[in-house]
Every structure is written in C-alpha cells, then in structure tokens.
Length: 91
Image (cartoon, rainbow, N blue to C red; front, side, top):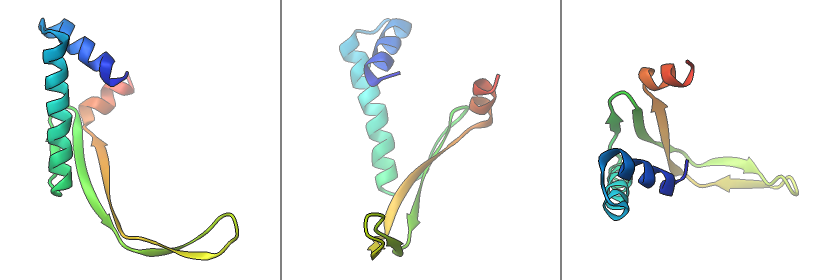
C-alpha cells in the first residue's frame, strides 16, 4: 500500500475529499516524525510503538577493500507491533 492508496482508503471510508484525506495523512505522519525527532516514543493502541535508539560510534570494514572505517554514531527509529497487529497478521 502506498501513501496515495492510504489517502484513497481514508477518503472512501470517512466520506472525505482526497485533499482533506491527504492533509490528515500528512499531518499524522508528520506528527509521528516530529515526536521521533525529539526522542519521544509514539504508542498507538492496537497498532504498535515507534521509538528511537542511539547507537554508538563503532569500527567497521569497507567491503570493497577490507579497510577499517569508523561508522558514526546515529539515532535509529524502530517499530514494535502491538499484540493485536501481530495477531491480525498471523491469522
């Protein structure tokens, strides 16, 4: 499912125009992104939880030549599905 498919589904299910549905979808994902950027956890009941985790700087290898390189520290985002979503996916 693409973003446009999601907009179409929301518009059809809620009787919205596609423009209004797109605004709602864009707002929702923007709010999740803004919260993640601040380091906040976003928990959606019955769906799952988005959280950030800081990974430290570490050594790695360049696969092309085997040279040791330093991989910078980074903040990663993860998603942990709720039990209800897992159950839905697994039948």
